[in-house]
Image 1 (cartoon, rainbow, N blue to C red):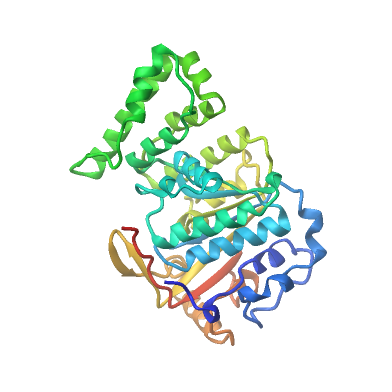
Image 2: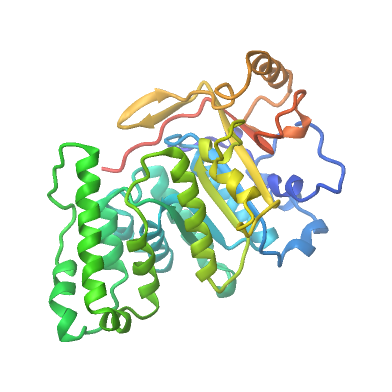
Length: 383
C-alpha cells in the first residue's frame, strides 16, 4: 500500500530551514508541502554549503510505520541534490550496510533477503533509491553506513558471503572459506531465547576471528579492500543490552567508519526516536553524543528531526500496535496540553513539518524539527 498524493508532504523543505539560522525562520506551517513542489522548495541560498562535510541530519521514528520510507526517500533526495549529502546512516549493522550497498550497485534483491529488508515498503524504498542513485554522477552516488550491533545471524553470514571476491584463495584458508560460501540461508537454528541466539552469533564471530588471526596475511590478500569490513565487524558486539551503552557504541562505530572513509561528506541518518531526541536527563542519546562529544566530527552541527504520530499503527514483533506519542513520554502534562492545542490550531490538516522554535513552548532542547504523521498505517511483511 502507498499513501495517496494528498497525504504526502515533500520533506526536503527541511533543508530550507535547517541551514537558515541566520535568516528569518519560516512561520509555523502556512502551507502543506507536497511532492509536486520539488522544483520550488529550494533556491540558491545554500550553494555555499554544498561542499561541507560536517553536517548530520538525524531523523527519529517509531519503527514499523509505512510512511517512514516515503520520508526517508524524499529527505535523502533533497539533501543529496541541494547539499551534496552522500552517506546514509541506519540503525543497522555494518554488514547489513554492506548488503544495502551491494544492492545499490547490482540491483540483486537477493541481498535484501533473510532479515535484511523485512517489509515490502523497505524493499520498495531500496528499489526506488537504487533507481535514483543510478542517475547520479559516480562521484555523487549514495552509500549506506551501519553503526548498530549485528542482530541477525542470517545477515551476518549473508554479509560475509557478499564481501568474498570472485578469485581463488590460498590453500591455507581455502577450506574454511569454502565452508562459509557453502552455508545455505536461512540457517536451521532454533535458539530457545534471544540470549542463546546472540551467544550462537558471538560464537560464530569468535570462530571467524580466530581463523583471521591464524592466517591474517592470507586473508588480507584475499579480501583486499574488503578486509576492513571484517576487521570492524569482528570488533563490534552482537548485541547491546543496555540502552546507554548502545548509544555510546553506535557513536563510536560512526566515528570509526567515518575515519576510514576517504570520500568525505555530510550524513543523513535514520534511527529510533529515543536515539535522536534529547532525553532531558543525565543519559545521553546517540544524537546528543554526536552533537556534544569532543570526538564528534559533527559537534554543534546536528539537526534532529522527530516524527510524532497521531492515530497511527505500526507493526511490532508481528503484531499491529498503536504508535505511542514519544513527545508525551518526555513532556510534562502542561507541556503536552500546550503542544496538542498548538497543533490542533494549525490550518494544515495533512502531514507537515514544524520548526521547534515556532511551537508555543520551549521544545528545542529536545528536537529541532517535528513532523506530525496523522493516520499512519503499519508496514507489511515480506513473505
